[in-house]
Length: 314
Image 1 (spheres, one colour):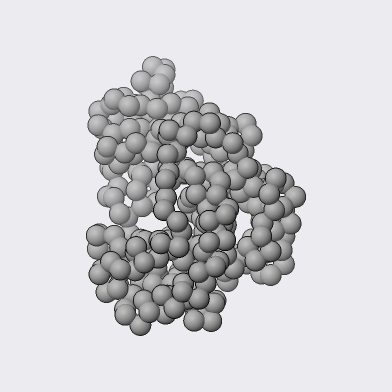
Image 2: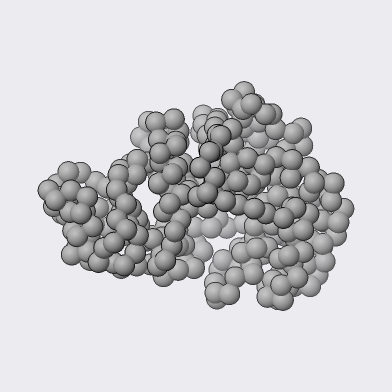
């Protein structure tokens, strides 16, 4: 079964429509010599509101965070930790008190397209891209974070997660009782694997999807959108990247493994691909429990669950 990529999902938080007056106020807070020439909404993502801003000093990315959002603290810490070591856009300025009443971030603008866009257009990736993604994942997972306060994730054993989401009435309504029982059977049969996944805890991006990876004019991969980063399952990041398995062939899966292991202090387990698919299954189940009415998203999430069940023969 073919799954539509998440580029068609509805937003969970409405897009914030700004004005040149607001953008000027934010940019001149950073540098009073800025002049705003034009701005363009970037209609990608489900939470933040992003704009490409044309100024007298070039192009920049303006991110307007949701009301009362504190994930910008992660973005700021990530910029301090990773910029210059990993391809991430430079965070230039954080506006914490402005006319929008929202946290606003100014980044350098990266010219390129997302890996998701490339997959939609071409249906496949070059092997060099797979290698860069694997090396980026390895770097993230091997990073030693001392500032744990910003990334204070304390999760229960992974074996408990599935029932936590499956027992929500709204999840059962959205996937149906038969699919729910198929998932429960799979999880019961794979309990040993769930304990194995918990052995691979590290720092993670936690939204390591092709949509959050840009390819620039030099064919270099950039990792963006760190708002969910923290400590978790490294196999979770990998499962998110390979979620739409029809976009990758067996050779590329082996290339990913080799590139990751060559640059990591800890090699992937021999059955890493299967474990990553099992780990990623919990994500659509969690998202299916949301209160918003997002029919396209929920249809696609159900398809992801069905695809994973088919992968394991359930």
